[in-house]
Length: 370
Image 1 (tube, helix red, strand yellow):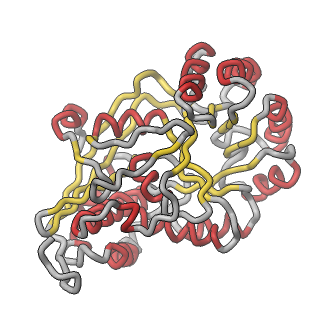
Image 2 (cartoon, one colour):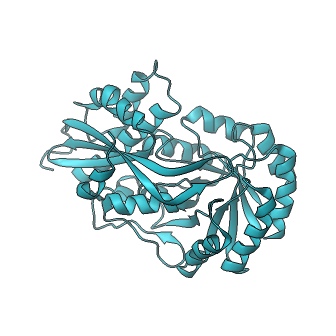
């Protein structure tokens, strides 16, 4: 970048594409089945540099970026992404923010932060004010569609790689879940932490029953035992659940009021947030501040190549979900992806500006749907 730090650097253009990438096997959790995941990729251009951002959403998010947001941010200062973020909030008032629109804003915001860091020739973690050198992770997958052998190989593989926290899905077929839990614990051994995620599959009473069963397998993290919209139910389970088992939720939060209400209700022991849903990096840092005000830990949901960078700037950081699907997609989509270190850490590469990623356009093109 040749301009002085006091000079504005206009955003020249914003482009977007969507890619539907099949899973490597059919997948399901307690409430949903799927066989593909769509990556919406945004690129922001200024002064000869390009920033990239993305979200995991339907192609309709790309339509929002192209039809509404590109015109809002083009011409604004690339060195002040939070100002563009504010402008996008006002511009979508009549569209309805939670959901697809928030995902679209998230992808643009991430691209603008990446662009700013590249213009300043700084790694994103440093541009964000890193508090930590690396972001702790836990391996996540363990889909209900897996047989017990596949489940054990995946979870055990993470432990062998030095990731001593792993998570599996539960709640689709309660009859089989005891056997799945036994297979999981046998595969990982007694020492590593075992997490479970019900994706809102249970009623309150069923969740209370299963929490006791999970405790018998040494489970320390119960995610979305009931719907994340049932704040009273989450609070009930948090207050009355087994000692040593944290109740977690928040991955479906799209804006600050959602997180405020969840925290105000005392619904969780650890809040979750997804940088590709909660209005991007700018939004996530504000969610982190809500946690800081309560000395509440924040766990980051998925999108590991962005989340690992942002996690270094979160004060009360618990960990990051190293999700099988997103790990695979980001390896397909980008050069420069971070790989886990023994002990379960993702460490940003401070020798590379921004996110440190470059798009592999040729590899993505066969999957393009927008």
